Image (cartoon, rainbow over the protein chains, first blue to last red):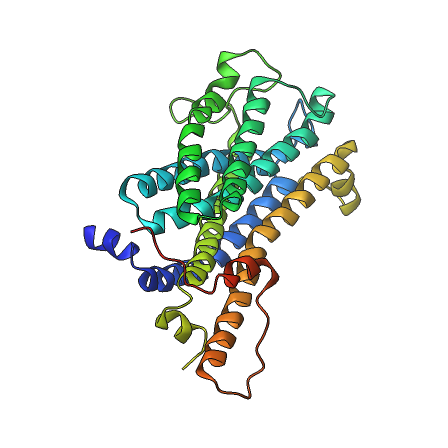
Amino acid sequence: MWSFIHKLGSPPWFFRFSGRVVRWLLPLTLALLVVGAVWGLLVAPADFRQGNSYRIIYIHVPSAVVALAGYYVMALAGAISLIWRIKMADIAMRAAAPVGAALTGIALMTGAIWGKPTWGTWWVWDARITSMLILLFLYLGVVALFEAYDNKVAAARACAVLSLVGTVNIPIIYKSVDWWYSLHQPASIKFTGESAIDASMLYPLLLMITAFYGLFTAAVLMNMRSDLIWHHREASWVRQWAGFK
Amino acid sequence: MHFDSIAAAMHMDGHGIYVWSAYAITLVLLFWLLWAPSQQLRERKRWINAEAHRRAGSGNFEFESVPESEQSVAAEGQPMEGNS
């Protein structure tokens, strides 16, 4: 276990390992995504109250769930980078930010599109939606902050602090539908007790959540690989990989 | 299958425009999420190879310009050092 963690810090080893992971994870994820989307769009029954508009749930919920989980990944990587000064953690933190931003963007946009036929409005400034918008700004903030610094060591440190401070937003997002009265419905899937969603609708949703987790992992690893290769472009193993003998 | 025909699946009792546009936006963003890093890695691989050849002084190798997105970084001409 410890030797595995130790190896993760070695750039050439990580580059080869992540390449293998992406190679099998990506096709698997895309297959899950296609199956889940077809199931949710065409096979699952319509909702008795919302009709067919509820089918947006199959992208809205997975993107929101993974955007939230992805923030923890980014903040954790930020903490590791800050405390132990591990370069790989810094690279992971920056790799997660654009992916999380895109997923948060998807959650917000699909939520707005879903809101129109269901609530009669594209947008309300309720707690859940506003805190998700803040999440988007936090992700974009990490991306922008890193670009703003010329000194990349200081930039990484500032990004790590920002992502750590931003974690206070995550429990607020989770609990927002319980703490404040809003148009947004409370969670339908529960880890404890009965889920408020029928199995015929639940299975494609779980499939899509799994697919989005896979997609997040693959995209972050791909960003990390690109960053790693550029960072070590003077190293001989990188030149060999690029085809220089 | 929930729908009887393709037309019914497109229309979704009036909700088709919302559902399909949401899926289309998602598809575009997810595609970008995977395409952008793989394209960047390919560009960097080409640049590193060309740069290595240039330094080796093979002479007959056409040196390619730095990918536009990397110009500021490459201009430093020094490998970035880790902070450890």
